[in-house]
Image (tube, rainbow, N blue to C red; front, top):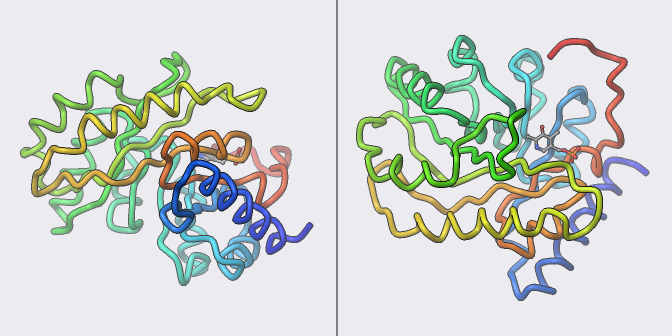
Amino acid sequence: MSIAENVARVRAQMAQAALRWGRDPSEIKLCAATKMNDAQAVRQAIAAGVDCCGENRVQELTAKLSENAYAGVPVHFIGHLQTNKVKQVVGKVDLIQSVDSEHLLRAIDREAGKQGIRQDILLEINIGNEASKGGFRPEEILPLLENFGEFSNVCVKGLMAIPPISRFPGENLEFFQKMRQISVDIRDIFNDNVKVDCLSMGMSGDFEDAIAAGSTMIRVGTAIFGARDYRKTSSK
Ligand SMILES: *Cc1c(COP(=O)(O)O)cnc(C)c1O
């Protein structure tokens, strides 16, 4: 199947899931997770109508930006970002989805301040409480946002989560529902740099459950581009 056919199929599945749960399909964005796919594949996905692209690795982001691969749609950073690389990402992407520690948040805020911009971000939550993953603990989010004034060079647009890989339908539903609850708990915080309305969750294997629970943005790689060939690259 071509990338265009894959995007059309994912769109149809998204719409079906949305309607099943009484949601408006237009309120759910499709972010193409483009890691390990080249500029040509990225352009095909954009031509097929994805809403934005999400890149995982700084090196790939920089290379594809220089090729103008993301022309026409916003580009997001969705991978783990080391603080020594924030300079290469802040101001280069429309949204950093994967702010997974206060240390990183501080570094992004400082860099955005230096550049004289305000960087849009999501806070990543380690919803499955996995030792292998970064991210805030759910109970850290409310106190952080209530005292967010010091981070005046970023704007929090919402929350993001990467739950454990699901092996069967419904397995991650409880994690998605927990995310939804956290987003409801913080909905009423009104602050100049906190405007929470994005809930980024759901990947190829579980986006229908994420939509059922209230996702407003799914990040899809495999279902659009096919399986990634990890032999082709060793860079991380
Ligand atoms: C790779 C990736 C995805 C997409 O995963 P698929 O299972 O291929 O759809 C989504 N989010 C993040 C953060 C990723 O790294």
